[in-house]
Amino acid sequence: MKNILSCVFLVLLFSPLMANTPFSLEIEPDWTQPSQQILVGDQPFNRLFFKGAFFDEIAPYQPLYYHSFPLDGPGEPIVQITSVEYETLQLTNVSTENWPAELQFNTSVSKDRGQYIGKISFMPAILEGGQLKVVKRIQLNITQRKTTFIAPRSAVFAEQSVLRDGQLYKMAVTQAGVYKLTYNFLKEELGVDVDNIDPRNIQLYTNLGGMASERPSSELRDDLKELSILAVGEADGSFNTTDYLLFYTQGPDQWSYDQANERFSFEKNIYDNEHYVFLKVGSQLGRRISNRPHLDNAQIQFDDFTDRQVLEEEKVNLHHFWGETLGKATGSGKIWYGDHFKNLRTYSYDNFQFPNLITDQPIQVNARMALRAEQRSRFTLSVNGTSATSTLANSIFRLSGPNDNINNFANSATLNTTFNVTSGDIAIEVDYPFPSSNGDGSEAW
Image 1 (tube, rainbow, N blue to C red):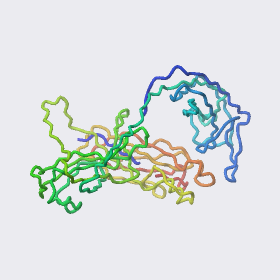
Image 2 (image 1 turned 90 degrees about the vertical axis):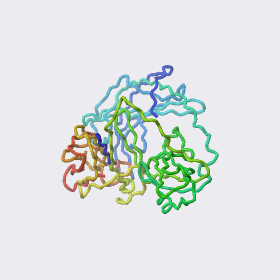
Image 3 (image 1 turned 135 degrees about the vertical axis):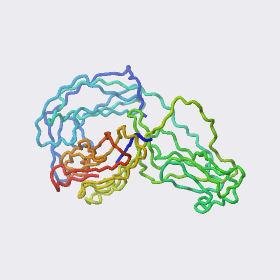
Image 4 (image 1 turned 30 degrees about the vertical axis):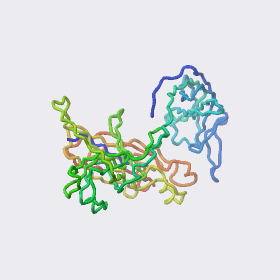
């Protein structure tokens, strides 16, 4: 029986603080000239300004305070606010789009000529209740998080590939599961000379499913790993027409369990739609699934499990869409979306089926959309007629015009909630209403 639906549209180390290098930092920004006019292209714009402010390309309208200081080691700087005083500014000609409601600190550590240097930066302004408040005076307490030494990854690699010899055949799968290789498939589809091989010498090699980790500290994938196989009928040393192989392998996409939130998360492979398994017929015995004795009188028994399904269609890349549709610089990105909500504002998805669903427990639904509108907006999702609304996505500075290369093209809205259903046939409907009026230029993905 099944009890949960997870539907998705679309090394953190905790350690004690070092006490040997704490210090206080008092900052009083000079707001004598609170705004500054700049030219972006040929268009003048006003931005918030204080003496000594610097700006980056990510948020060219947000002034940043920057400070560097020596450190005793490579540990991460930790910033805590001891006290802060704000002053309200009435500036109607300064853009405050997407400004935070609380102070946010960025920290980093670098090393120069043997000396570790800590760096902090933050914007000394917030948007609270629609009012712009700037920091008049702030006192910070800065400490350091102890860093545990991490040994470099081993540089010991396999001297020879497992595919260096034997007869090799490449297979592709599109999802995780148990697969069956029959006499006919091996002979007709792969071209294996099954009538003249010893099936006991068949080996299967693959690697972990999903995308390779982008973390430099992650374990390296060095050569392929051998899978354990259930080989039915191999004992006589020949592959007969009724013999077959069973094996399990992961797929190109990957599910992982979030222990903290007690739910599964899904990662779509953005580089390949297939995962590959190599069949090798060589001169040594292959790995086989071993038998284990049956356990009697088990203290814990299960008759249900958590099932999950996902809809994440990779139809549109917003960076490419921006360049191709609006005649801007073309490119791509790592985040893709599905249906386009513009002329058609409602889509139905009826392909979720969960046989034997436990209906006295709620199902969990997670959804995300990219919304593009000049007003704050949200989407609505219905499950079997019961509706829920997403979080509010921030508005876009402007839908078209100059400087759209430095403004967000779209902002995300998410929905994470539960629904009560009476059957395992799940019909989902997603609606993106016009946030202002019909034809207001808004769209979503």
